[in-house]
Length: 141
Image 1 (cartoon, one colour):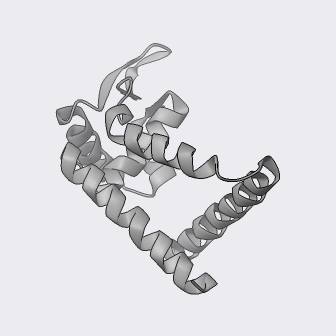
Image 2: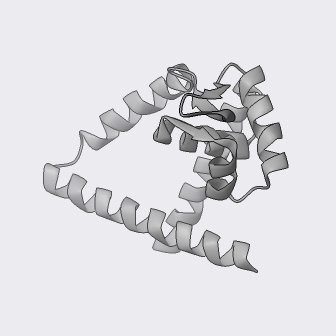
């Protein structure tokens, strides 16, 4: 498969996977992106989450409401400033749904030498950088 076609196939497969995850959990792709940010940070304020994912504070309220209803995150007073709320991901929020993917990707990566894995990791990191930059450019319009 040629490079551009492979990239489109990868993108389509990733989107389809995340749609299936969202359907299983009752959340949207934006909700999943927010949960990834929350889990990566440990906890985050609604305002910081809004800035990170490019949503208004009101839209983030809806995202957090859906994540709470799904049992994936919760809000609590900020221990450093009780006037503010922080959002924390539930432990193992995606664990069960991603267990199969993790196992299958581990099996796939085992087919490659450490040097080949390093090249693959470099390509993935570069792809993520390109996608983030293109997303930034599109959202500026």
